[in-house]
Image 1 (cartoon, rainbow, N blue to C red):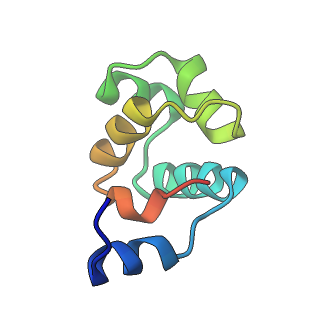
Image 2 (cartoon, rainbow, N blue to C red):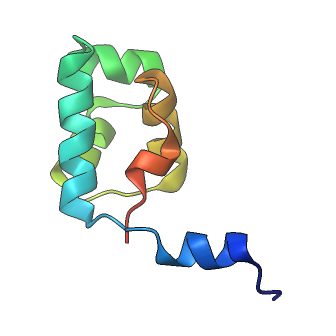
Length: 81
């Protein structure tokens, strides 16, 4: 691995706890006017998967990316530890 200023900055960025990420997902969904069912349809996920993400029990990166895209959130906002 090479060390560069970009790698250093990335390693020192604040990382969110899983419960914080879950809360951000729920808040963004509600702010966008989506119900859990609406978000499930938009992302192609089932409602249980959305609920798991919002409860902090599921942090599949692929699901997280689909939700972030649907809610027009940059993935960088949702960096979980």
